[in-house]
Image (cartoon, rainbow, N blue to C red; front, side, top):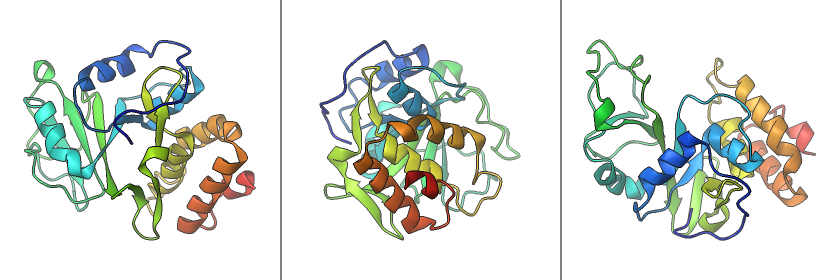
Amino acid sequence: MAERRAGGKRTGAAPEPVARVAALMRGFGRPWAVAGGWAVDAWLGRETREHGDVDISVFYDDLQAVFEHLLGWQLLAHERGWNGSSAELWDGRPLELPAHIHCRPPEEARPLPQDGIARTEEGFWLEVLVDEREDNAWLLRREPRVALPVSDGVRRSPWGVDAVVPEVLLFFKATAYIGIPRLEDRDSDNADFDALGPALSSERRRWLRNAIAAVKPDHRWLARLE
């Protein structure tokens, strides 16, 4: 991600959920980009399916800036080791990666149940995905190491908002849930691959194939990326 990014041409206005997040993040002053399913739709220039919330990516070293920008919001952090046993809101403390934060504005705040927070994600319409960088490299995975220059990871989408590039979106969709059988082969991820994969240039397909193969050499998308 970069502070200002060139490239891409606006071909239509972003749908209301994405436009709302773009307005919210105006003035944030740190790198951020639309991610997840809405980013897939942003590159396609159309809505392909329903989305529960809008995902954005930020870097770990900008977490304090996120907390200050969303001061007063209900912020619910999930991090490594989280087991759903606490209803404690995130107070800006450092998080152990991988981590993400569910966000709900003050006017929509409601009490959280005290018997666990797994059910409370309903109504949190913004999700902040926390990514890692080292110098000018976006570290997509630490072991095995998969990285790319920060400036290559985000471009301006046809909706006029900055979005994570298709090959990085598909890398995360291919590898984020390895080892979790119920999430490892989601229909939504396969649909996103079917939609975005054919649009990748040969160079970007090669990068995606090598990146996925480094993490999961038997992934079923690899044959289609030949």
